[in-house]
Image 1 (cartoon, rainbow, N blue to C red):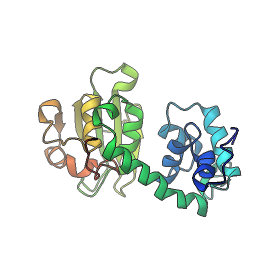
Image 2 (image 1 turned 90 degrees about the vertical axis):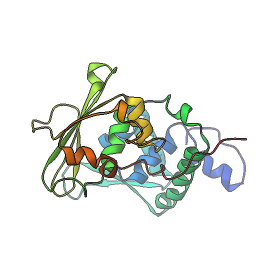
Image 3 (image 1 turned 180 degrees about the vertical axis):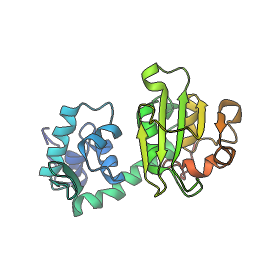
Image 4 (image 1 turned 90 degrees about the horizontal axis):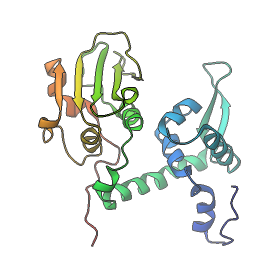
Amino acid sequence: MGTPGYKQFCPVAMAAEILCTRWTLVLMRELVAGSTRFNDLRRGVPKMSPTLLSQRLKELERAGIIERRESRTERGIHEYRLTAAGQDCRQVVEALGFWGQKWVEARLSLENLDPSLLMWDMRRNLNPAPLPKRRVVIEFLYGGLPASKRLWWLVVEPDGEVDLCWSHPGFEIDLHVRTDLRTMTAIWMGVTTIEKERDRIELDGDRDMARSMQAWLGLSPFAAEPKRALA
């Protein structure tokens, strides 16, 4: 995997040689979450360079954790799919995530704010069930950020498909959500709730959607794990 290795027969050491290179476990998080295409994987690891992403994918393929194959629906498009070995990594990734949610101090987590990653996670975990059975557009405005990162749109189709837009989608906005990035990240991580942060969130638009926001917003897959204080 491009490193000297630990030179130990221990299974932990041998697994670490594959999974513990820089960005690899974070990339595995994206693969486990269901991203299969290069551009989608990039959105999940926005601070990882395309060159390093390509390198890590090749390393995981050589290790037998993923396989690269042509898309069944689009010609010329390739997808990265977890093999049986890759699927077995799901428990490893989830266990690490739950450990981090439980033991890493929330204040430290909230120092690593990233609007593109937050919105990408929100897109794939949004629960469309409480929303109207039509196309719904939700605009998020994060005050204090540069203009290029301030506005985001989630478009929820009647069939439940959710798309994330970096520019105005051209549809009427059903709900405007205005807050700061730290507050929304804390809500997403399960550190706080929309109800507790009412003075930091401004909701304008469909009243039913505003009222049910906690239900359709969804949370981080690790939010159910309560925080614990280290001794």
